[in-house]
Length: 508
View 1 (tube, rainbow, N blue to C red):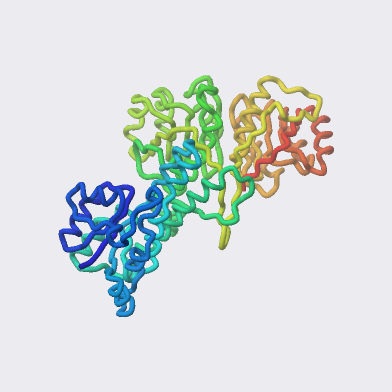
View 2: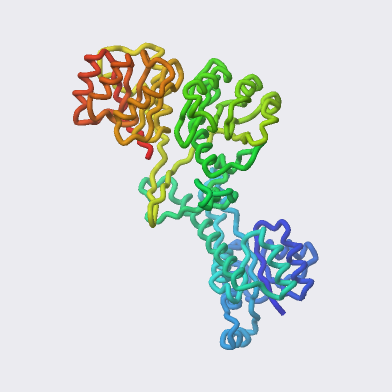
């Protein structure tokens, strides 16, 4: 007789699998809540305590941690191992089906405190899974509910599954336990100032993508936090998001979170290739979009546009003849959706705002670099005015807008803001003065009276000279160069208001 250990927290559908196994001569072993659940469905179950002759103890903390459980899981099908099991009057376990205490779900309720979180850490389940996965050539392990039916059907039809399938299930099992442990480690690290000595990049596959950045690259989306916008968005219309769509959509999402709807009646952002190419505040949503689009219509073609409040019909009508890949907003009126109904390929995404990622990871050959995400934003009131010319109220508002946008532009980054609009972007240049010239050159509007913002300090006064030629009246930079005094003197000479923020915002 073949034997299966079934011990699952999420029990949906497990009764039909257990019934099919039992109906085909398998003996079902279980403990605790799973045993009671299966018995309530009239499925014969041998409780593990009957085998171990040892009761569950410590409020259920110890149920399956026993040699008479792990021996049958870890035994090879050799005469020596099977003989030892026979001497102990126990039989080999051929199949282990386990999922764990819901630590991932518990993270949504972590305000209940440390004791609550600790009690949601599974010990016996991961131990059985690791044991079965180590012995995959002799013991089949299933941790994914999607594998229940196809694997059990093959077992019942053919008597076994292939070694390749066993190995694949074992790989998934070890990856699952690693993912589970990484969530626990991440929780326990909260509040600790130093970076962890060991760090896992863990994620649950949300979807396969058509390809990666290019057609010859494989691509998939993984989620490590249930609260992620990529785990909560609703695709209302259009094809699936591509790899590149996801990257641009993610930047749109992050920018929108800096412009809450209650403080900004109209805000729109357009992103292309991980750089903002249009952004604006407006008296209304339509006004904000028209301004954002007018910043750089050529670059906006095929981009992703986002809004900080539900999209209305009037704005949608303004947009409907423009080619965008994706529209992202926290909601849509019926009139807005009707306006886009004929654009079948347009991806319309509804996503709740408010999520802010805490960490940032970039891969390097053989490893990765880790940092806190750039979520700090120094208030305008803490900036230092280094020259004598005071700012007007309009210029102050433009500084506030640009200061929220600059950290989303690839370094070396220069942006120009005027009248609540992003009118020029110089991104990703090796020379800061080149970024200045590109930002000015790309502007479709006169730069006179505008605000120029830099993500890092100006190493020379040449950028100030260029700005002065175009009658830019305000320049914003972190400061910190050995030539700060030269830059300040040149700005004073050109009657430019020069602000030092004291904070750099590189984005590589």
